[in-house]
Image 1 (tube, rainbow, N blue to C red):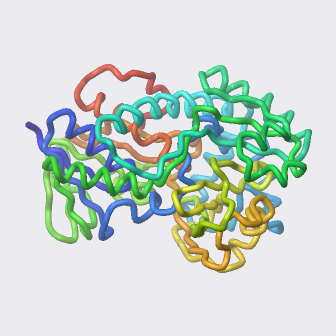
Image 2: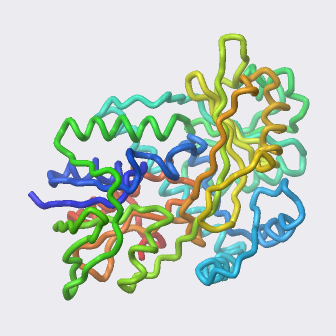
Image 3: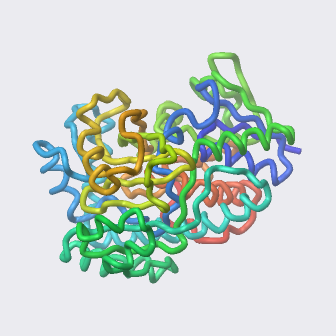
Length: 414
């Protein structure tokens, strides 16, 4: 039995621990926070959505970022910075904003997401972990006919990779979710991801931690990995604020903090934080919340019913490592969700949050081996961490064990 050490206890690190435990390893997970899923996995959109696996870097992205300098309704938002890491990352992102790169990166993303969803269903069946699941699909809503037509054409790349993307008119939208019936005239139409699903990522992660702890996996909380000690071609120790730790295999799943640990030992990961904002709103018996999740595509405001709560998310902001937020950051998304669901939740009791997505310029994660024989990577899942996590963890476990991976790893390794 080999000793495995996983750095990070978000959804990616915890699913990594699960796959290594399944392979018979003695697994320890450490995290800087007091519990699992306290950073990126805390308040995300909750969508497992291969039907939305487009690359962010596209020919349209530079214009969107430029307009965001004076408009607050853009899907991507830029706050200029002289941080060398940001400038280097943005230069690489700009290089991916071609039609060919966008198509290649989207194909890789959707292929990985579809595979990950299959693995997720296996994990769900094997563990029985609960998480406010909703398997009813996801609506992708369009207000203008031109945007709807363009999106339907763009979706062909997802359909070619096996995604179930249907087309709905106004009445079809109301049939899928009666909560939108009164407002159906706002829309030209919708795409419908029939196999897409939703659920609370944080609850799933924490319940999977409890499941793993009951089976011998060790979790160390408030333990920060500070740097790596190297001897020859191996990591001899992970130096933490609580002392040194060693293992036969070490997997870095630290999200936006992964480059901080690997850069000093010569592994410069192209990962930079992209801030997202979310609101969690209670739903009482008198409210009429949505039945399934959806995205108002022209504002990129997403909403997800989660039991007795409604999660609303928006914005991808390039603004460094800060998670501070102000009421103004939520004004646009609040207006959108209220227009969709005027009585959808108790809007007087909103919990506000901002978190950081670990983005690569391509939008695909970085998986597998490094130049050190016992150091592995499972990081950089960006805005698709909940969707990708089970698949990326299975892939890395396969690579560690020497098994052939179920899908190609072309374009998603170091």
